[in-house]
Length: 330
Image 1 (tube, rainbow, N blue to C red):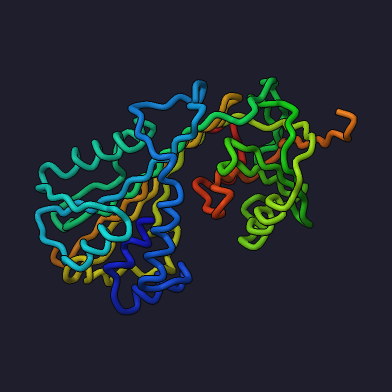
Image 2 (cartoon, helix red, strand yellow; image 1 turned 30 degrees about the vertical axis):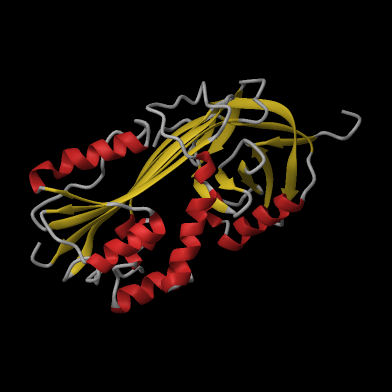
């Protein structure tokens, strides 16, 4: 969402670059992404902490965004659009107070799952866009077993903590994948997408992931024996390095001569027999050049796979992770 919000202040080639990636522009872009956020507002709550071993029976999906101006005045049209479409307030802070202010915001809006901001403000920092997502939900049906399972990691087979249970869930398969959809409620679910042997999860294309979502949505629930890893995943990604084709050099609609100096995403995702908790924070620092009787299927996840938490009504992936070694925390 930080990229969508940055688009409101992008100009020239930077705006074209962002629109090419998002596939929408102007008010169409703002309304579409604003509507995605609005679709999840019935789940909004902000607990002080969440526990994957005691997740809430009613799912929690908390979203928050803001722009923090650091010893600077930002362009008013940009601030107006953030407020109108993304419910993102603007706040002011001095450089001396910027880091603790950023840290406190991240901790609050992730219920402590992510303890601090990834942005390090300096004398050239004039603003920081912050966007946070917090998710916590119990499975509609809990896993009943927690076996140790063999898992084929890139470094060879390894025993990992596992989850097992028999559920009435949607099952689907494609040329290079099989998948199940594990619900939290009628709208929120986790897709566990297992590539066929010999296919790396990172090799699955955007089209194949979309195909999995579509086919699962059309499938009827059936009995499936599911065995998969439990995991506790921590990730931190420098998005400027990961997405070099996105031009963020002209954000003059935010502040004159503005550009993205830092763009970092942090994520925490924990899956247990009881449910799932996760948080993600994406931050962009803006600087200036100056500054039964039915057959039961078996679905065993024993090699690298894809785990996706989504709103099945819109297809919006809240979390998307390729799990190569579930025993590693990062």
